Image (cartoon, rainbow, N blue to C red; front, side):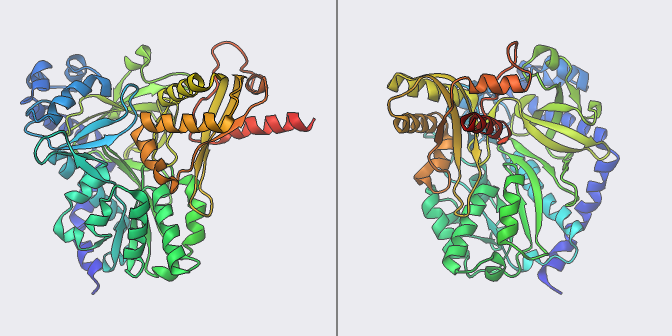
Length: 512
């Protein structure tokens, strides 16, 4: 009997428990809310909003306000300075660092012991449980798991307190038994310089029996390309003949699937999407033939949803008044997601939008963000970054921007990618390359995730600026019957749909 078949038996009880997601979604969520409020009542935040006297979801919505990071930031900063019992009982020593706020370069999400155990690690275990259900002949535990992680650093001067990527926090706290089955070494996994880390990971794993991968598709691809370069092999099947699954998350996998299928050609390869973020672990594919994920309902996460339409934002007061719990959602509608968790996030707007494809079980797809953004490679570039970056570049060069849009250029065969900006200038800069350099540098100053991904230009290359002809954007709006009124140019997009239409329109005009 192989090791995987032995370990697989340990997941059977959990596989039985997960069947409740098909029948008891409302009950599971009500139990989670009750548990979180009981624990949160012993905090300063809980006393302020009278958690002890909340006995129903309706009372919860009346007494506890909706929040975004800006509202919780002062509370979190006190926690980072070592205060206890602020948003969650006890002392919190781990903080996941990510970008995405309108005013701060980085946001710091508390990661409590309960959150690690009952959200993040539970999600990882359930990913394996579902994978074994789908693949009973798996041998993944007979080899090693290649898990990519970030880095961490000290938090202020608080003893034993650290901030860093969530993946680094998970690796730092991983159980010793699980650590025996993963590569690279913890020292390598937690390195901060990605260029050096990629080289070390590739060399450390080259002669290992890697059976499974976990990480963000863009950065995993960069590592795999280096493994192929070092090995001289054409496909990863030659390097790791027993490779069978990639647990991926963080960004959309669709743009990368073809590249992975080119370098991994074994018919037994599987791809399993996970919905995990600094704020929590929320969803898993329970059926690898269905792109929709199961919303995980019995973790320390209580969900609420704000209905949106194509012209709305999550901050819209009218939409906010229509917030529903899980049992109030409808299929086929777009919702902004709000969470309450054992990491001290109370009615927190996460910024993602989802659409349910079915109920009982509750399955969904991620439809985007509540604001314009580019997060094709984990860089989380938002509108505020773009506007401030352009303002700086214009100030330094005397240029004036009339219209613009930006989108990713996905990875080539060398695992290189970039952002492409299409800009219509009212006053052109004398040196377009200098304008691009100033914009790129300023974006790195404003956004720590963009800065990290741009480090050494290992994967994310310097941004590219294409000069748009006069009136290009107006012509595009006219072609879509959206000229005038409240219609807006899509400034940032995770898709190339809009920018490719604009570039084609520009090309068509030039050939006339």
